[in-house]
Image (cartoon, rainbow, N blue to C red; front, side):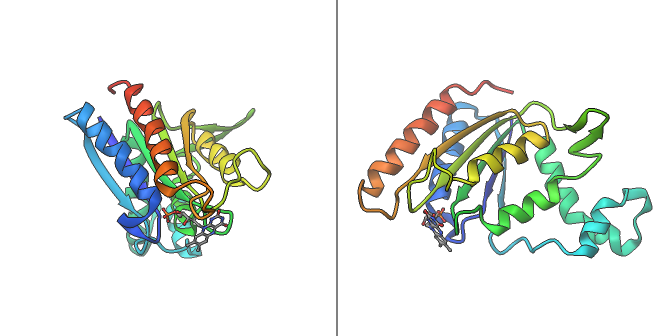
Length: 203
Ligand SMILES: Cc1cc2nc3c(=O)[nH]c(=O)nc-3n(C[C@H](O)[C@H](O)[C@H](O)COP(=O)(O)O)c2cc1C
């Protein structure tokens, strides 16, 4: 089983979202000893997409100039990692009511016409195969089910756009509110992740 784990927290491995993705990864590694894990830590390793890179990425590989071939290497690698994955685990901290800009930049590179989605007469069609996706969201406040949760519908749109339909969401909300303890909130999220791992079939 190929497992891709994406972490955009600016706190790196001490981030709360990382704690949750790490719990999922540990559970999958324990359940499936043959897991091949690819870690894609985004903080400090991904820039905003430039026009030159976008043009390079959008040009078929046989037609790229040498400079474009070099520029497109990174997005090609990100797409290969995603295409190869049977299971994808994504950490999503809430920063200013949105996903981290680094994660948005990752989507800028993996949503590629003709590769991960295509346009048909009846509209866009996702081209990625069957994968299980787990999204672990961490938030200082509590927004689930309210219009302030702009993350969930956007993430559903983005994953659905490339054909990912088996997408589960786990939330650790209220981490800064002081109403429930951080331990209690994180334990609740970890329990849901454990259940998700238990329900994961081998690929
Ligand atoms: C720059 C920044 C912006 C934030 N904006 C919000 C926000 O809009 N709403 C919210 O509920 N929490 C916000 N938080 C709190 C984070 O969502 C919370 O600390 C969460 O644990 C972040 O996940 P992480 O630890 O994996 O990075 C923000 C934190 C940072 C650092």
